[in-house]
Length: 133
Figure 1: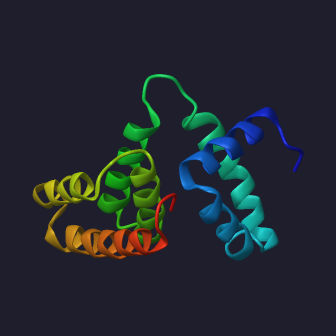
Figure 2: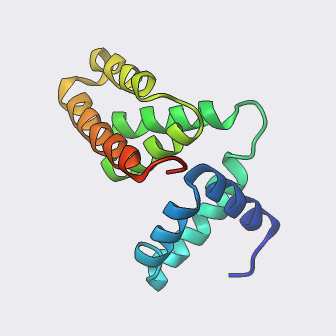
């Protein structure tokens, strides 16, 4: 795929949101397959290049929207990624935990339980990795 301006912008935004370590890890595991590389290219351009760069919301708010939508739809692997992104954008563990807990009245306890388990694991990993995770 030729690297369009949106692809380049999306790559920069993705790296800013995820951090170098996670981007490199995913490049060597998830996106090392030709099929998944196509998906990664598309998401860089369409999601990060177009959606995340739109005016009107900051990255911190957009990251929280992703966390909430993942919990509501049961997208647990994506939730783990977006929780990391939300922490990198300044949300605290307590704030994210409260946002997830707030969902109990709207999406139900089983989904919130799974989301909280994912958050517990992600937060523990990030604490073990140290600053800049």
